[in-house]
Length: 87
Image (cartoon, rainbow, N blue to C red; front, side, top):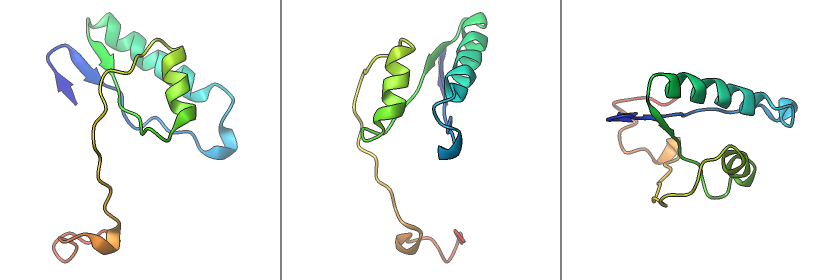
Protein backbone atom coordinates (compact mmCIF):
# COMPACT_ATOMS: atom_id res chain seq x y z
CA UNK A 1 0.00 0.00 0.00
CA UNK A 2 1.20 3.51 -0.62
CA UNK A 3 -0.08 7.00 0.13
CA UNK A 4 2.08 9.84 -1.11
CA UNK A 5 5.63 9.22 0.10
CA UNK A 6 4.51 6.47 2.54
CA UNK A 7 5.15 2.84 1.52
CA UNK A 8 3.95 -0.16 3.48
CA UNK A 9 6.22 -3.05 4.37
CA UNK A 10 3.94 -6.06 4.64
CA UNK A 11 4.04 -9.82 4.96
CA UNK A 12 7.46 -10.24 6.55
CA UNK A 13 7.15 -13.62 8.26
CA UNK A 14 9.66 -16.13 9.54
CA UNK A 15 8.90 -19.84 9.90
CA UNK A 16 9.16 -20.83 13.58
CA UNK A 17 12.06 -23.20 12.83
CA UNK A 18 14.13 -20.23 11.63
CA UNK A 19 13.17 -17.53 14.13
CA UNK A 20 15.82 -15.89 16.29
CA UNK A 21 18.48 -15.80 13.55
CA UNK A 22 17.99 -12.18 12.49
CA UNK A 23 16.43 -13.10 9.14
CA UNK A 24 13.39 -10.80 9.48
CA UNK A 25 15.57 -7.94 10.74
CA UNK A 26 17.92 -8.27 7.76
CA UNK A 27 15.02 -8.40 5.31
CA UNK A 28 13.42 -5.36 6.95
CA UNK A 29 16.67 -3.39 6.86
CA UNK A 30 17.07 -4.08 3.15
CA UNK A 31 13.50 -2.97 2.41
CA UNK A 32 13.81 0.14 4.59
CA UNK A 33 17.11 1.10 2.96
CA UNK A 34 15.62 0.78 -0.54
CA UNK A 35 12.59 2.88 0.39
CA UNK A 36 14.63 5.61 2.02
CA UNK A 37 16.98 5.84 -0.98
CA UNK A 38 13.85 6.55 -3.05
CA UNK A 39 12.79 9.26 -0.58
CA UNK A 40 9.92 7.06 0.65
CA UNK A 41 8.79 6.68 4.26
CA UNK A 42 8.27 3.07 5.38
CA UNK A 43 5.32 2.10 7.55
CA UNK A 44 3.85 -1.21 8.67
CA UNK A 45 1.17 -2.82 10.75
CA UNK A 46 1.40 -5.54 13.39
CA UNK A 47 -1.21 -7.42 15.40
CA UNK A 48 -1.31 -6.44 19.07
CA UNK A 49 -0.70 -10.02 20.20
CA UNK A 50 2.48 -10.35 18.11
CA UNK A 51 4.90 -9.19 20.83
CA UNK A 52 7.96 -10.61 19.12
CA UNK A 53 7.40 -8.72 15.85
CA UNK A 54 6.34 -5.55 17.66
CA UNK A 55 9.51 -5.64 19.74
CA UNK A 56 11.62 -6.04 16.59
CA UNK A 57 9.92 -3.07 14.94
CA UNK A 58 10.40 -0.87 18.02
CA UNK A 59 14.10 -1.81 18.18
CA UNK A 60 14.37 -0.86 14.50
CA UNK A 61 13.01 2.62 15.21
CA UNK A 62 9.33 2.26 14.36
CA UNK A 63 6.86 3.71 16.82
CA UNK A 64 3.20 3.05 17.58
CA UNK A 65 1.03 5.56 15.81
CA UNK A 66 -2.53 4.25 15.82
CA UNK A 67 -4.52 1.17 16.73
CA UNK A 68 -7.05 -0.16 14.21
CA UNK A 69 -9.77 -2.76 14.45
CA UNK A 70 -9.17 -5.81 12.28
CA UNK A 71 -11.73 -8.50 11.66
CA UNK A 72 -10.61 -11.99 10.67
CA UNK A 73 -13.16 -14.23 8.97
CA UNK A 74 -12.61 -17.97 9.02
CA UNK A 75 -13.04 -19.68 5.62
CA UNK A 76 -16.18 -21.50 6.77
CA UNK A 77 -17.76 -18.15 7.77
CA UNK A 78 -17.07 -16.30 4.51
CA UNK A 79 -20.38 -15.08 3.03
CA UNK A 80 -18.91 -15.07 -0.51
CA UNK A 81 -17.36 -18.53 -0.47
CA UNK A 82 -19.68 -19.84 -3.18
CA UNK A 83 -18.47 -17.06 -5.51
CA UNK A 84 -14.81 -17.15 -4.45
CA UNK A 85 -13.78 -20.57 -3.06
CA UNK A 86 -11.11 -20.24 -0.37
CA UNK A 87 -9.97 -23.85 -0.43
